[in-house]
Each structure stands twice: as structure tokens, then as C-alpha cells.
Image 1 (cartoon, one colour):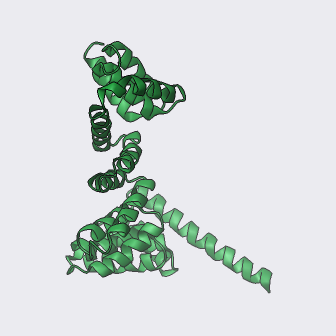
Image 2 (tube, one colour; image 1 turned 30 degrees about the vertical axis):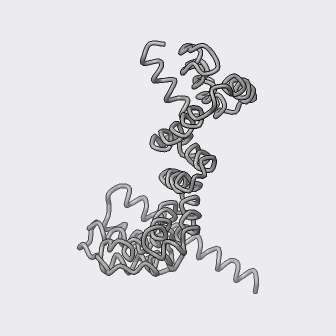
Image 3 (cartoon, one colour; image 1 turned 180 degrees about the vertical axis):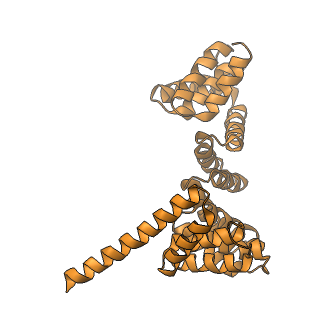
Length: 278
């Protein structure tokens, strides 16, 4: 009996997967009408991807008459079956109106964004952070907002890194802010790089000049141990003549080392000096 149930389960999974594969193949070849039929069949068999694609095709008028209400219904069904993109789509409707221009309901938006974020959709994490920060009891949910932005950053949505940095910087936690700006900067988010550089420069500029030679040694030791942030700061000292004689060529070499260690802020400074002919 157990073997029979297992066989039936595996057979069902195979049929669902085969239906989706067929639909995807038809869709990629712009055979939208046939693809729609297969997606709808998959959805009827409780395929979250099938339901999502049916909603997507209703939304974007692909082989069917554009129908935002039906699109929303299929997105909602897909979400209930575990599709993270569908949950995000429904969340947007309750947060910003979306395709149906619904009346704002941040509690419902929270519910759908949270489902989507939990299932790995980074933009849902970011949007939920925004809902907490600006609309849904901001003071009470300040920590939740920070947590969601962090999740967005960790899942690859770089604006999340930038937002965490901004919040911590506003709270005077420059060390924490620098950590998150660096996460964004290292993944080539330019805004995060600029904020990170600003913190580094201010940190050095506000240091007692008598400490520069000591810092020079500390930063060099750190850079020698392949700490890319230390390489950046060491290069700044050489570029600005703090604790040592000003030397742009030396600074460029150190920026290059930091860049090779994965520090994107160092890469930007290296390119600027290179453009200047050093």
C-alpha cells in the first residue's frame, strides 16, 4: 500500500513538472495561447508556478484579454500554494494599490510581503522594511524595519544594505553603518560606496594629527593581513599626506591591493587616480 501511494505521488509530481516544462517551452517560443492552456492546467493541479504564470499572462495581456482582477485572483492562489513572487505581487496591491489600485491596507501588505520574504524574495523584504519604517507604526516597528532591510541586503537586494547603513548612521553607530555600507559597496552599489568613503574620510579627518603615524602602522599591519578596509584607509593617509609624505602613486598601489582583495571603494579610488594619470 505504501509503495502504491509513493508511486502515485511520484507520478503526480512528474505530470505536474512535465506540464510546466511544456508550458515554459511554448512560452519561450512565443506560443502564448498554448502555453496559457498548459499553465492553467498546471494551476488546476495545484502548481504554484502554473497559477503565477496564468496571473502574469492576464496582467500582461498575453494571448488573453487583459484582466487585472483575474490576475490578482491567480496571484493570490499561487501565493497560497507557496509562490514567493505571487505573494509579493499581492503585497504590492495592498501596499501601493498595484494593478487593481486597491485601497491601502498595510496589515494585509505585511502578511503577503512577510510570506514572500520568508520564501527568499529579497524585494518583498525591502518593501516590508519600508512599510514598517514609514507607514505601519514606525516607532513600534523600528527594529522590524531594520531586520527586513538586513534580510533584503543578505538576499541580494543592495538597496537594503544602503538603508541599514543610513539608519545606523543616523543613530550615530558609524561602525555598524560602515559594515553595512561595505556589504553594499562590495557588491558594486555605488551609493553605498560613497557613504562608506565618507565615513572613512571623516574618521581620519577628525583624528588627532599626532595619531597619524600610529594609524599608519595599524592600517599597514591590517592591510598586510589582507583586511581590505585597512588597505583603503592606509591609501587615504598616503593620498592626503597624513602621517607620511603625500604620495599618490603609493596610494594608487595600495588602492589596487584593496581592490584585488574585493573592496569596491578601493577600486573606485584606484580608477580615479588612474584617470588622473598617476
